[in-house]
Amino acid sequence: MGLLSIIRKTKLKEHEMRLLLVGLDNAGKTTIVKRISGEDASTVSPTLGFNIKTLEFAGYQLNVWDVGGQRSLRPYWRNYFEATDGLVWVVDSTDRRRLADCAEELARLLQEERLAGATLLIMANKQDVPGALGADAIREALRLDALVGRQWSIVACSAVDGSGLLEGFEWLVKDIAARIYLLE
Ligand code: G3D
Ligand code: MG
View 1 (spheres, rainbow, N blue to C red):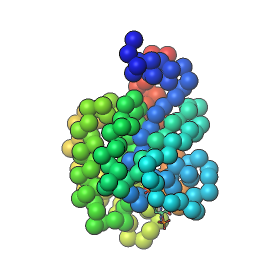
View 2: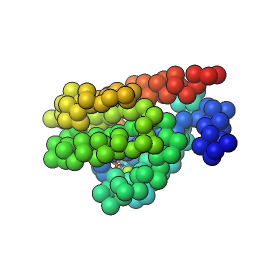
View 3: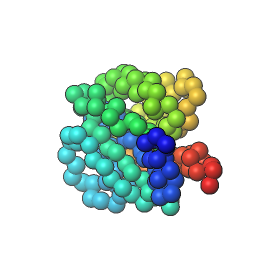
View 4: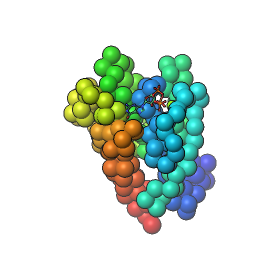
């Protein structure tokens, strides 16, 4: 039995899911993780490297890997791809200047073979900021409708007021559960 199938078996038993949280730096990834895990989200510092957080959510144990998004760190994302069940791509919906960069990085990530089976949740974050682009504009900018063979969804959210976060994670967990716990 390969290592990957051992990991999968263990995950099944423990009701575990592994989520990879990625996106450009400053998108709000660490704030989202803190908010969802009920921690004080008023102080976050830029993520150098990664944080791993284990949360209980909807009866599952979520192992969330929050990976730093600075350009210099992006080549390291691939070290976290193995055995990823869900991919959460966080977008700063106020950052119009880097939207093309954001689309390009997402497209690159989705080409990764090891992520081919992962469910994709796009979080259009910072909706509390006046003038933030809505989910439809982000969906278009990231060309989500052109994705083929991928389970995906987009949610408008704010890590500051908490809106949309649970909705997004609920969808993600449900979609993954339907896939990996099918055999139970
Ligand atoms: P990252 O982990 O993706 O790099 P962080 O992003 O979680 O470190 O957040 C980057 C900055 O965006 C932080 O501000 C954080 O407070 C802010 N932020 C995150 N989510 C939201 C949101 O939904 N709305 C608003 N208005 N701000 C948000 P600072 O000022 O600490 O750099
Ligand atoms: Mg961070």
